[in-house]
Image: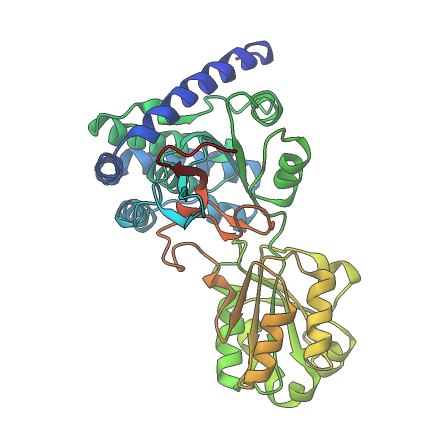
Length: 422
C-alpha cells in the first residue's frame, strides 16, 4: 500500500466506524455481552492460530534485536491467551456503563434534569508491542458502546490481527457489525499520522498506549482529545516507620514482578532514619533478583554494590531490571522528590505511621497512590474494572485506569410538563 492510498483507506474506515458506533449505541447490553462471550470462546478456539501468529512476530522481533522487556511484552503463551479470554469474560460481566443516571435534580419550575452516561463514539487506539491490548481495547470499547479503530505496533501485527479476527467472530455471532472493531491493515507509519490529524470528522478520542516517544507524538499531533500518560516514573517510599519485611517484599514486587509495565517502580526513596535497618534487606532482595541499583551518594557510601546515579536517573522510566535509589530526610523530602521527578502515574508509601500515610495521600497528586501495597497494582483488572486500555495521568475526563466506565461521556435529559421560558 502506498502513502497516497492511506487517506482514502482511513476515511473509509472512519465512515464505517461512525456508522458502527451509531448501531452500537442502540444495541442492548445483552447483545454486547453475547458478543463478548462469543469473542472469548473464539480466542480459545483459535488459540493455535494466535500462537502461530505470535511465533512469527517473535521471530521477527528477535531478528530486529528488541530488548528483553519488549520481547516479554510481545510474547503470548497458553496462559496469556487464556487470560485474554478470561479478561473479556470479566468485562462482559461488568455493570452496564451506559444509561447510568450520574446526577438528577428538579428545578423550581418542575423540570427534571438527569445526567446520563453515553458512549464517546469512535475511539482510535494506538499501541505498541502488546498484542493482548487488541482484546482488552476491543472488549472495553464494545462494552461501552464505542466503535474502535486499532493501530497496533508493527512488531505485533500478525498476533493482533489474529486476535482481532476472533473479536469480529464474536460481534457477528451476536448480530453486530464487524466494523465496530477495525484494525489498520498496514504498518505504514503514515497511517498513524492520518489517524491523529486527518480524521476529526470520524474519530472522537485517541488513546495511546506505549512508550514515551509514541505518546509524545500522539499528544503533539492529535487533533482530537487524547486520554493517556507520557511516562510511568513510579516511586516507592520506605518511611522510617515501615515494617522491614513488608518493605522488602513490596519493593521487590513493585520493581521485579514485571519490569516492562508502566506500573513498575523506577525509583526507591528510603528514609535516612531507617537506612541502617532497612537498606540491606531491601537491597539484597533486589540484587538477588538481578536488579541493578543506581544510588545517590549516601546509598553508594552504604553499599558498594550500588552504581552512582546520574541526575538523569531520577527522570528515567527504565522498563528494565534497574532502579534508582535515594536516601531522603523524612516524608517532606520524599514528597518534594516525587513532585519534582514524578510523572503523575503511581506512588506508594510503606509505613506504619498513619499520619505519614495521610500526608502522603494529601500532598501528592498522582493518579494512583498506595499504602503498603505494590505499584504493580496500578492496573484496571486489579481495580475490579475487568481490564483497562491504559492509565490516564491527565485531569480532564478520565484519570487512573481507563476501563469501560471511563470510555463514556454524558448527555443531559430534561423532562418537562409543558414549561416555557418567560
